[in-house]
Image (cartoon, rainbow, N blue to C red; front, side, top):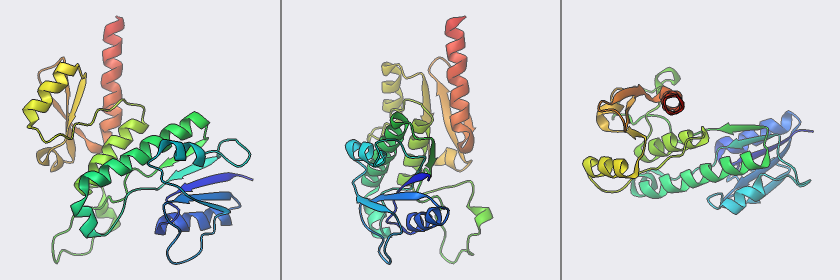
Length: 236
């Protein structure tokens, strides 16, 4: 029997995913900070764990028999009502980033065979008052609220194997750019209202004067190309 771990199993989507996996014959462990609100969990086992803590993630990905799960579904994220979302942007970004970093690392170290990374809890763009209902076709490219957007990009790059330094200081762009050069950061990714209007980010190599705009959907692939090009240049 296949075994699956669902993180965020106390939420609406996570609890329904548990039910689906059970119907398909899986043994399922659910993990969350809370139990499902409106019904009992269908999971074979449900653990209350704070996945911001690395040790809890390491415990969660180990089966009762001591081996890795066949599949891990990472849906856990810091969520709340609109009042909380707009008042706790930095807290949300930090918490969700910690969950994704620790879960990805724990799953890789344990040898999990398949890992589903949902990336962001909120991907729909902000809508204007009286704007027509948003269809699924209009939901992509995603344009989430700031805290979810930053966390999405950071966690995606981290999960893809990049070493990421996230500079969220309340400093001017010039100060941040200068400090990045002093640290020897080889590639700088800048997100701004100007670039987001084009669904892009600005990418600049430290060794080059000019930057380039890269579509959000292509950022991980483009960064890998730039790193490979740099490594090839060093070895030639």
